[in-house]
Length: 412
Image (cartoon, rainbow, N blue to C red; front, side, top):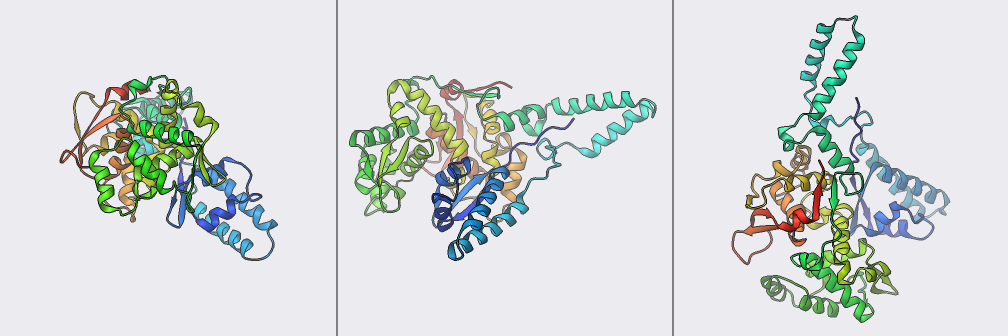
């Protein structure tokens, strides 16, 4: 019995010049690959795009067509060099087509073969059908047996979470899109996103800077209107003579996520609210907006942009598993973050982080930065810190809020 593997996403790095050429009209069609490139956050002089192997294959085909049709010169040379680099990258990261998910389920192959040999000896060479039936039964037992390293979930449950966990029917995770605004008031991300959208709609938009950010005047307005910890605003003014969007990191992330979600767009060098964004501005649509922001944040937005600790794409690819494991934690008590990763991250994710020579910090920091911190901004968990009033890197304990079980439903 062969089980299909979960889709693996890999980080593809493009220079800003490469990104510009690919996005120019005529290079690519309005495909999902183009949208991935267009919405990927820019980090300095590069952008990092999370792509599946299939996405990368499509991109390579597009680059080939563009290079073939381009006139000889710098543009064609750029496309040819880009193709060579990405083709080599693809060859290095192409998944093993023969893989059957054993690395995720961590099956002891030697033990499995030993048991199979025992069955064959018991049945005898004449009983091939009996061997086949026993073999299928043994596969089922391995697949359906609770695994301590996977939080007591079975291999089948883990597979369902990884392959079908992104809250689409008939998957095992559901988002409640019908929560009223008063139930979502604890989500600073939602409250501040609504503040941003309302302010842009009321003003008819605001001019974008040359780098595509919100302008300083509008940023100052958001610092004044949005919900922030008092010490955060004090630190902003203490360490910045002038405050740009990039200085207000939470505002920048909200603007990027709203853009990826299709709620904002740049029109004639101004940031404006889209038709979809306007449709979700009403308080009665708060639950739908909340679910949309949550979906985009964890599924489409590149989580490694939050911290630059390590790419570790496996963490984002297995977010549904981590959410399910957090959901199984007793909600009435705090849990130490130190030592929590093995309970909520798959073993291969932890190994991926530890084996990355470019990573720094520890896996608890990674978990806090990319999962627990964002969940706190969505009002789904609470965290204790070393000292009250501190923020960023001082988190010690975490617990679920009632909103977690109201919003996320798991059918395992």
